[in-house]
Figure 1 (spheres, rainbow, N blue to C red):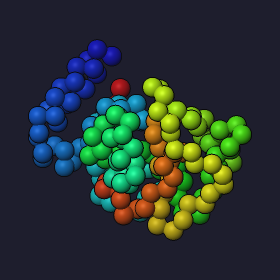
Figure 2: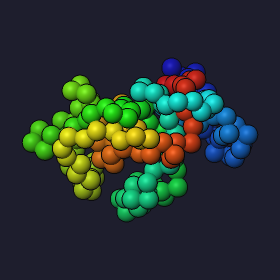
Figure 3: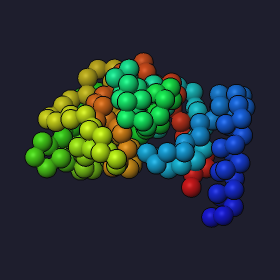
Figure 4: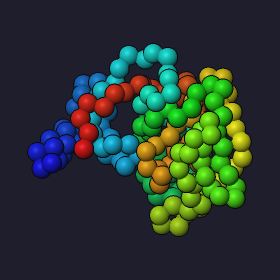
Length: 165
């Protein structure tokens, strides 16, 4: 585990120092949304459920990121595609349970870890044409359970994990 941590920190420093050629091919995830580590960008193909994607969040989400002090709003998100066109998802107003096609995905929280109000997306939904629903493996991650679907045109890359902690 210690060796993995050293490699990971070395990669973090290298990418932070601006090795642009590296960042054109690789994406370094340091958040808990998905496993931390190095992901490789692969040629864009049709996006499928379960794929990992890097996308630009909407202007509303960027503004919320800045307002709540989560970041500067200038960074793309790395998430997993949880639902594609035609898939149904729901968020119960009573139980705050998030489901896709009837399968439990996780809870929905009303506030973040420091007390900021989170968007309240509640009800039954269907993913429209040319959209996907991004999700994370961490229930506390800001994903489609709060922001809803994203348009495919916001997707910058499809990625695969190369090295994760």
